[in-house]
Image (cartoon, rainbow, N blue to C red; front, side, top):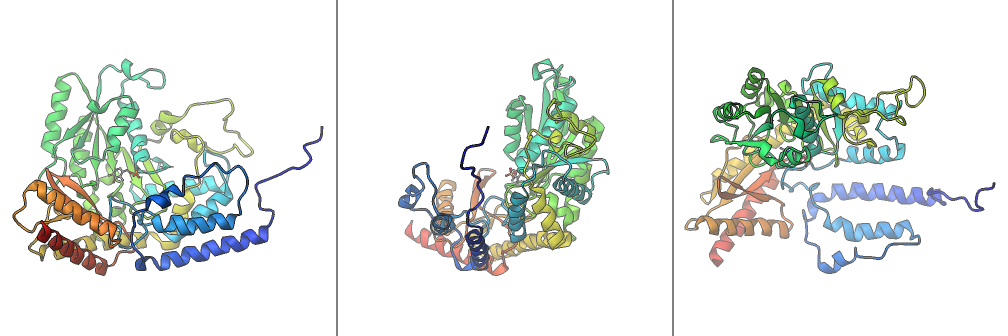
Amino acid sequence: MRVPVKEESLDPVDWDGMRTLAHRMVDDAIARLKGLRDGPVWQPMPRAERNGFDIAVPSGPEPLDAIYADIRAKLYPHAMGNIHPRFWAWYMGAGCFTGALADFLAAIDGSNLGGGDTAANAVDHQVIEWLRQLMGFPDDASGTLVAGGSMANIIGLTAARNAMAGVDLHQMSIADMPQPLRFYASDQVHNCHQKAMNLLGLGSKALVKIESDAVFRMDLGVLETAVAQDRARGLRPACVIATAGSTNTGSIDPLEAIANFCAREGLWLHIDGCIGAPLRLSPEYRKLVAGLDRADSLALDLHKGLHAPFDVGCALIRDRKLHRATFAESAEYLQVASRGLAAAEFLHDYGPETTRSFRALKVWMMLRHHGVEKFGHLIDQGIRQAHYLKELIEREDCLDLLAPVAIDIVCFRHDPGGMDEATLRIHNTEIMLRLQETGVAVITDTTIRNRHCLRVAICNHRTRSADLDLLVSKVLRFGSDLSRQM
Ligand SMILES: *Cc1c(COP(=O)(O)O)cnc(C)c1O
């Protein structure tokens, strides 16, 4: 039987034209990155423009250069802005060009990192091996690259649950566990752990929030009491989730003391290092995360402090066998062979996904291109800038610091005097929105011990101290304008 007359593919018919357009995209990308500082960080998208994305399903083709023109006109002006030097919202990386090239090259390579005897597989192994060494984990520890910190935490907590369940959770269910499990985290823990508890079938009641101390670190005494009480009640304390770099203030739980406690009590230690783990690369601040290497599982977020383009995170697990046993399931159509393409360990045995993207390439290229020392210096730079901002704030009578500066996060607010808590919230929210809407800077806000504040997270390799000068001058300007209007 003959195939249909006209066989088709997705490859360009006009490769030369495609090459020209692709080169133009690279030129434009470089120009965009070089000119970032001249433009607004972010600007709101008018409704009319938003409606421009409400078009019919394209049944026929359209020239790629027209689509690209659309992207330049409609997408670029309304990006999130986290690549801009004055973006300090939440806690996000600023991306980097090497990583962007890597994402392109990985897509062209096309390898599926679920497994296979490929160079891509070797790159993935290499990246895990580098991260293992950098984090001080033992030789036989394992790891897996995932979409981000939330998924990395889920991997670690799943391993913890299975290790501590008291029954084989491959065969049995949560309901078969002899005792309900309890996980412990400080009241500053990231909400992805709450999500994880629910996904794991344990429910949020399984996550016991431990009060944090005056500087937002888990209070060890409260933890000890909670664990003892739960044991007495017939519950099974399973895991302590320590936070190395909390989202609100950047505080770092007392890792060594918690590790000692976990060792004594036979508890799994999971460390959420999404913000703080890269401090291990910092010559100056490394000591702040002493004890990080004692975790049974560690979550890293490479698209934050290492500025890989979204998305890439990593879970490291001390016990490789247990890690694999947590996720590996056999299937007749997925058998490791002794020869041929399938003659390599299946990487999908270390997490829930089967097909995995080649996100290892961007980490591999970035670490090689910049060198690890550079990343350490950038961590130092962000922390030093945070302390610089703190000094600027302390110089002003109407600016108050609301939390100690632990690393690269600064919490403060404008307080012209005579405003109650509710008014201060409205006042500072308005300052934040004006900063965003004028395109000057993007920061976010939070509430610490019932006090509302502005929050500046300097996870941005493009920030210069002059950007922080500008931020403070604008906060003072908007703040005094507003208080005069009130
Ligand atoms: C960002 C963050 C997460 C979630 O990571 P994603 O990459 O956004 O999924 C978890 N924990 C902490 C402490 C974080 O800062």
